[in-house]
Image 1 (cartoon, rainbow, N blue to C red):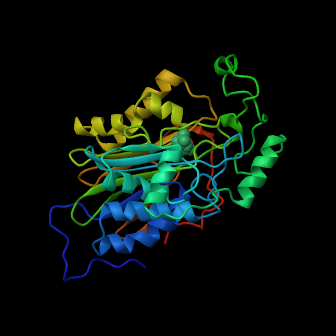
Image 2: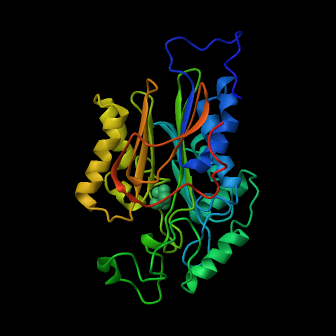
Image 3: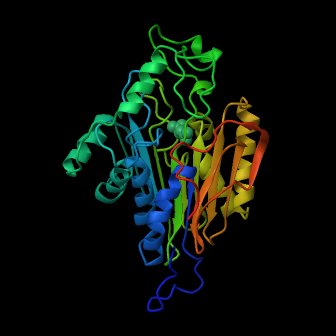
Length: 349
Ligand code: ASP
């Protein structure tokens, strides 16, 4: 299905072959669509934005873009980031009126002197960029929220949690919960983010990350995904990394920055991911329902992925086509916290 690059435009020697790696099975469709463009010379930045855009527009993906599950008040807010280098990155968070938040993050990077825009300011910037505004709440997501509110299962694959609408997630935070504030516990609401890394024919790296965040989160909560060095980090001198899972844990260890720093100091991508997950385990002692997974890609084109629990899947587009792959390692394979996504179109090319 996928064509090799044309003979007229040979790949620059000494660069790793073009590659896209992305989190979860629902990114496979975007990888499959974007890979021919990567082979024919599109930039890594263009391609990671395209892969993220595909998931953002897909109503069956309930953790990204339209179709994303709302916060505890029923409002969908989106977060995204793009990165090419420490001096070239952009992000947006708590966007409530615009769908293509990865493109918006790219515009922040390319059209402003800032890195991050939040909330209404980010939406206003999108208006100023002539990006169309839209209602982000899909009928299915609205129904899921209604079910969540009254304590019914919401029907996601791992929607097995016994509790609904509890006050805050942990006993410690519950002790400080203001009256009337409710949001989901992680046990009842697994959550996924699209994180994409690519290398283009010129050997340039880029990454993107896009999410609707933790389903039924406390209004105003922003996780790791749009924060540079947490959900996404890229440094052309070392490599790139993306994270998915419980954002609060990734944030506590600057997960993707740590992975890239490990590679800068000589670690393989697998060792780098292992170091981040080990650090998370040591500090947070995650419960068996909590998932964190990372993909790391070195500047020379080697990549690896690892997860705390079983269920994490990588979509990978390279010379032979697009495939769904298991991560290189799982710290606790006996614990399964997320399965293939319902939006999974059925695997590789
Ligand atoms: N990391 C995202 C967040 O915490 C969610 C996810 O990847 O599942 O917002």
